[in-house]
Length: 164
Image (cartoon, rainbow, N blue to C red):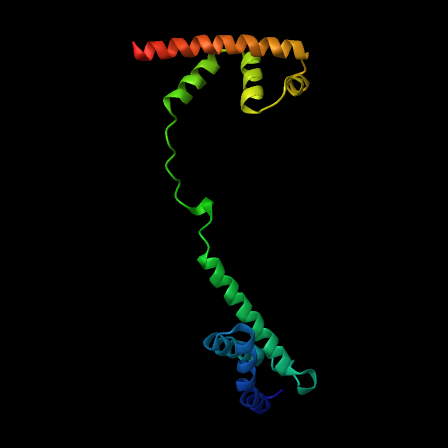
């Protein structure tokens, strides 16, 4: 397609294409911009465009794709920013009870601490804990019992020390 043919093509189809894209995207200014951009791209490809292969369909498709891309960009701009790019939020300090519990758990033997955490924080049954740690269920029960007694003692001592 030479320059004169392209000019005739542009003049004869611009308004029709704007109307078609407007009907698809619902925004007249956006439709005009997208059709204009599609014609700019068609100008760059005018040697490949010929009347036999429906250049109007090529421009319409390109304009529609541009409108969709702009719409996607606009909706992405309205979404809240990615959390990874946001400023970190201040983390609330743990409460006194949480600090006391963590301190008391740290004083327990590892096997008792693990049994207590798996049972009370992870909601695992005695049999599930036994399977996970590779110990008999009776051993897990003993660790839970001893761990609870030790925690009760450590936490009550810690509370008495704070209130004295």
